[in-house]
Amino acid sequence: MSDTRGTPRTHGTHGHGRPWLSWLYVPGDRPERFDKAVASGASVVILDLEDAVSPAHKDAARTHVVTYLNERSQGSTPVHVRINGLGTAWVDDDLAALAADDRGGDRGGDRGGDRGGDSGGAAARPDGIRVPKVESVADLDRVARAVGPSMPLFAILESARGLRSVDEVVAHPAVAGVALGEQDLLAELGVTDPAAVNAMRLQVVLAAAAAGKGPVPMSVFPRLRDDAGFLETCREGRALGMVGRSVIHPTQVALTRQAFRPEQREIGWAAEVVAAAGDDDTPGATTTTDGQFVDAPVLARARALLALADATREPDGT
View (cartoon, rainbow, N blue to C red):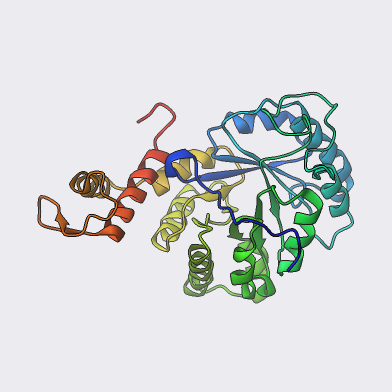
């Protein structure tokens, strides 16, 4: 086991247990969109150096992303970076640009900007790094060594080998979350059966839950003009225990809130359960007004539903 491994951590939620719902990708070579994405209401903004950027624009995209990270003010919306794949010609430069220095602080401390108290001064340090096409723990060790053990990594599983390694990947202490890259995975496997796709999704949900690294967001829905398909597949994912989705357009941010919003009957049930339990985390034989037995798992489910309901409120609070 390498020395990049330390205390496990998990991300994927706002404060007070509110889950992150929308993970908005922005091409790294479109800097005019960065602030707009942050203002879109997305839970997380992902500045993309990988699939959204053509080979001819890779270096320019990296420069734009680093400049933005150096100059941004620390806000409430996390900003992540998706690096290029570990087998590409660009990834070493990506990692060097985002790396921590040997003192455990951030590189480039004399470059200005406000990172809200990071050690070593302001630098090109995102709030997380998305690692595409992860296939092994060794892949994660390589990234963690380069960027420092304090940087949360979000592993994307896009191949059969990656999916077979899901238990080891989610157990890596640098990993804060995991997701499927379904387009690449399904292309490799030739799978078209929805039941088979859901079986793979559930495998990742189970592994993440066992490692305390959930919830798992859904993969990108590529058909921008198919709102009905977007909503339907989100609801299928929610039935499997998935929460939220990676999105590629700001209009899908509101759709994600809509798709994952619990029904009023669910919210009413959850509120009654929490009220019956009061402040007791182990309510034992407590019952609701209609006589439902409330124990710790039921209470945890109710609190998770209320947190999801809170996260799916519209920006105006409705």
